[in-house]
Image 1 (cartoon, rainbow, N blue to C red):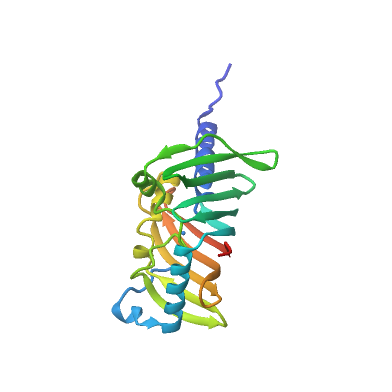
Image 2: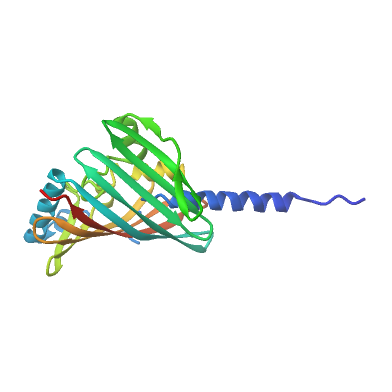
Length: 251
């Protein structure tokens, strides 16, 4: 009897598994052109916008708050476009926090829960069961271990390093401010999450932009648009756009 050659099938199966693995990684993120970082670029900063950004950061640092997150990750792998819907949110009480991101698409349904309680850091991946996510026992780590894996704890208004990272700051309307960040400086720690989840080398961030809606003292909504490239499958471009709506504890 003539033998059947199964090699092509094996190769295609391997590629399919690798493709899905990359999409699972993208489910937890939670980054086209390179931004200018010259001295003149940093001069494009509206004073009122910078004042409001500072006030929003200071208010979040001294008040407990919760957020709800809603967004999408768009990626192109092997020329094939794919979109992940991302939902979740944060609960922040001083240095303690719980940060959840849950992503759903036709191919991927995964969750990631990270937290710090009583000074103990942990993370756990969730499985999609009966139209909701179930989380098992978390893996504990030190603060340094957490930062190395996921970046700094998410207890501020955003995951980026804002000090010395704002390239431009403009007022886009009543209580609306747009900030373009230096992609290298702003993601000095947050890029660790991508390296961990995707098991890739250092990602190449192309742009990071924040749109802050504020009442003049605190952020009520922040929309993030980040674009980056990872060196998987010859180079994969990703765009993550999401909004966080803030609510603060009554004082």
